[in-house]
Image (cartoon, rainbow, N blue to C red; front, side, top):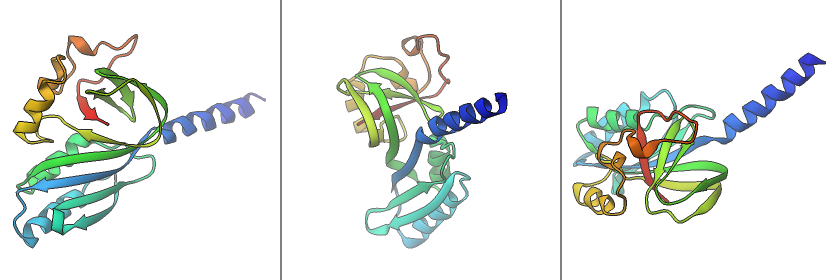
Length: 182
């Protein structure tokens, strides 16, 4: 009987883990000037262990990444691979599957192994696939970063790391905070 309950709890735990996942990303790379530049970036992105498939839109210098089911996606590793290829991230839009997650302006939400800070978001409950645009420094232009800086007074936006504003009720947030818009 104990084994039966252990299996049930394990299955429930796996369900919740599987439902909290970043599924895809649309990555616009800045600075690409030729097919060899795109190829170098593509090859760098292919080395990410959590990437399942990459499609390209060379006209818009965009890479469409599909992540492996159940994989932990490291957003900073994506940026690092683009930079290692000699370019920068112009825009990163994540597609994540939510199951009744409450968000509001300047809320910090732990999701899929990361902490997201929702900038300029109205109070709402997210369910199903949602697109989140990462607006941290080095994920947007300097002009856009400055614009978003006016939409929050929280100091974590300037550094991308946990600050006094990031205290989460009874939870220890990771040092890295990803700032996003919906």
